[in-house]
Image 1 (spheres, rainbow, N blue to C red):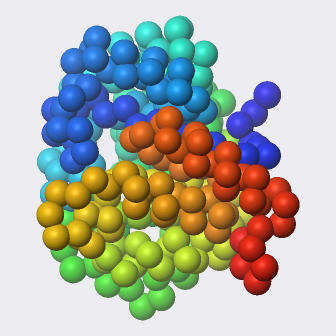
Image 2: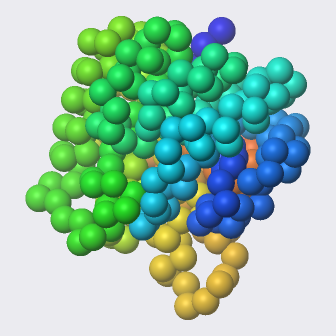
Length: 278
């Protein structure tokens, strides 16, 4: 059975196997800690676990493919064998994706929208994998250097439509393509909120929409200090799901499982009068 279509909002748990994650600061960098965290997310109700071995926070420096593979592949292999949850690999390198898919991953989450590695689409196609393509402007190292758009949503939709066309041409099945507007990746504070409001427009591209806003700066920049970002993350993900997100990518799986039960119930009975979710 495939992931889509789904009658409810799917929850993708974030598992950063890096020493420099913006959120957990390397808390799950070691193999044992990463596997334990992945198993906990599966037990809490994650529908997908997304394993990443390279930080893509603003200003991050790239790591080589071998280093990334050494970080993610043992964790992917262990979780694929034990967790009974689909495993995704968060990478923009085809070589890393190929090895992770061989270790049991069934999805590639490419933050570059196929723009960094020309072999990525073919790699996903050859494995019969799901492929999530994300919009980004620049690279993680440069993306927040004065991002500007003439028409934010139109440019995102155009980028994603082109990425989808390349994926289809490479042989990725239509039912296995997901699109992601790239909140926080080359966007201003206002841009990020405009994306959430504009999700019905992205849905018109015709593919499931993934949203990853968990604990990002669109929340942190509203606060004066180090306030807990989870309440606002829950609120925004609820709105994103209501506006049309099919998958939400989150750090805190358990609270989101409970929140999405309520949102999905609201959607099932017709929702709020006057709010167009499509």
